[in-house]
Length: 80
Image (cartoon, rainbow, N blue to C red; front, side):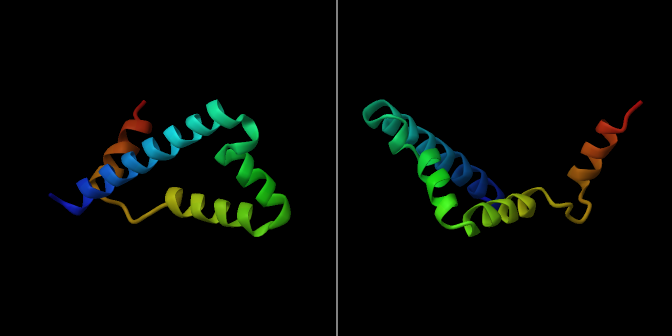
């Protein structure tokens, strides 16, 4: 199995597990037990958390070197 495939599977599994856990917390303990609430409260106490969240997000969506796949996407988006 390729590293790309493993990465996609891991991203999917982490998303499903965290989403499921958050739904479980919401159902059993209410809003105050959710991941979102924990992050929000922690962000007020430690402003570095939203900064790191923004930094990480920009890391994922920052422009990378063109590949065949990104060129294909750009051509599709710019098609007139």
